[in-house]
Image (tube, rainbow, N blue to C red; front, side, top):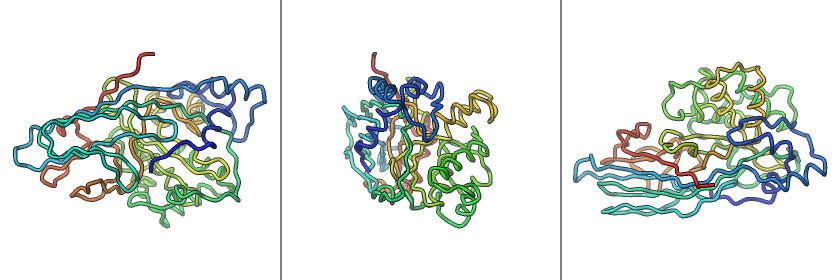
Length: 362
C-alpha cells in the first residue's frame, strides 16, 4: 500500500529531543538513550526543530541480463520499483528494455510497484531515492483510539507468520505481567535480542518461518524481524515487515534488508529492527549485555538509519501479472521465470542481475 506522511509521523520526527538527534547518527553509530516515556524540555524541543535528520540519497540501478537463455523460451522478469513511503521520496524512475515484448510498471494487491518485462535479452531499471533517518518519537498510548485500516490488516497472519496456538503460547509467556501494548512490544523486542542470534549460513534474508524459528532461534533479517512481527500479532499488536535494500555501497546486489514496525494507539507506526542489533553484535563480537549492544538496541527501538530504501511490503505476494509459480514469500529481490520455472533469486550471478548505488554528491 502506498503511503504518505501523516501529521503524526512528521511531528514525531521533528518533536524528538536535540539530544536524541545528536545521538542517532546514520547506521546507529551511537544510541538514542531516551526512555520510552521521556519528554524534552521546551528549549530542547525548539533546538530539535532546527536540526535536520540524517538523509541518504542517490540512484539505485538494477541491471538484468537474461541473454543466456535459449531463444524461443518465455522469459519473464519482475523487478521491485521503489515508491514514496514514510521517510522516503522516490523520483526519476526510468527503465530500458530493448527488444522487449512487454515492459510496463504495474501494481499488485499490496500496492507494491514492479517493472514487468517479457523478453530474451537485457534491461535496466533505475530510480532516485532520498531516505530520512527515523528517530524515536515520544511513545504515547491511547487505548480509546481506533485502528486505521492498515493496522487492522497488520493483525492478520500469513503462511510463514501465522497467528496460531504455538505463536500465541510463546508470545503470552514473553509478555506475562505486562499490561500495555508498549510494554508487551518492548518485552518481545528485548526477548528476541536476548534469545535469538544472526546466522550467516542462512540464504539471502531468510524465509521468516516463525514456527521453526521459535525453536532454532537463528537466522537473518527476515527471520528475526518476522518473529517480532508474529509475536506482536499474537498478543493483538499490529505489526508488519518492510522489504528493501541498503544504500551503503557502490555494489548493493546482496544488500537486501527487512525491518519491522508495530502500531501503537496514540502514536501510530513505530520502528523496530532487532535484526540489525543482532547483526551488529555478530559483526563486532559483542556480548548481549555489554554497553554497545544496549546502545544499539535503544537506537533501533523506534529508530532506523537512513541507509535503506523500502521496495515492498506484504507476504504471500501475487505479482502483476501473476507469476506461474506459487505466491512469493516476499518481494524484495528481482524475480524471474523461464518457461514457467522460477529462477533462483538468491543467486544473482546465475540469474543474472546486479544492483548498484550511486550516492549524490554532497
